[in-house]
Length: 117
Length: 308
Image 1 (cartoon, rainbow over the protein chains, first blue to last red):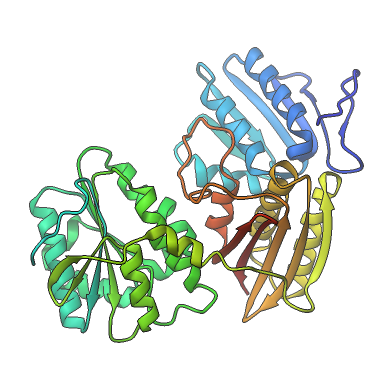
Image 2 (image 1 turned 45 degrees about the vertical axis):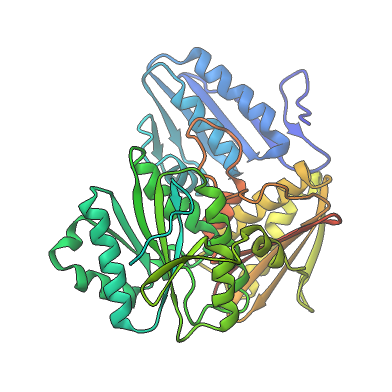
């Protein structure tokens, strides 16, 4: 259901949710803006796969431009972090749902550090 | 107390009590039997009854997990994952013993069907598991219908100190009986949605809930509506209808679609940490004060309530 163009532009589904996601410049990790939900799931998961492929010690996930993330979007992030061989993931300025859902379903996940808005 | 062994591993008796003294006496005995057998024990009952048990136990209370069921189990749909399984899963070796009192005088007409279904589903959720869950029922203040349902949802009942098999035990019948048709209240704000309108559906629910007076829990409404509308798009025929209204001091959000809920424990099974999906309905149960569902050939309706 994902409609990401070949150029890696915004993922868009019939005027619904849009997510732009790409690598951070100058440090390891990704930045995203828009909404993380069922129609943008593929781009989000692809970006997380890329993050874990390049992960060394600390990776950053910059989410200041994300307005909403659903439970499966938080799950994809949590599972990505759990499966890393080591180190940690710093999630910067996420929407408020993210820490709430993380605390609810992964209360003891040490590998994700949240730097709030 | 005589003991009837119905099921070697899982035991789920209802306890009909007629007075506070009887309540304290029988629950404290039940807890002490567990402690003597080295079993981890949890007590999740309404606050006043919590004090009766705590007082009756004296120094033995220190080894017990106590929860006020009017808080932890206000939404009956989160008792299995959030209270019962949460405790049992912390003690995976050996038998656990729990007192769970989800039904009390004062449960509303909207809440009761969800309470009865919860009691029924405990049997499925704990089938084959080494656990004893005792469910006290206030025989002097609860309706005769409620006590009759307790005989259908519990394989055994302890009445006036004697445990006997329940002749009417048939938990699936209670799940089916309270699968009651639902529909939006007159005057509800209604929005049809498909895949492209998921963000709009979320905003619609938040805006309506705010205008009905909700302030602190708007984020919960947004999350829960996102999960239900996403379920409609993925499992419910690709589209659905969202309705929002206020009722008896609560905001109600209802999502209707053409899907069918075939798993009676959907939203009540704790997920494995590494699993990606399967948390949407759990989240709805967690954030809401009450969840009601109706599922049939023609479709599924899920409604959740949030107190103003």
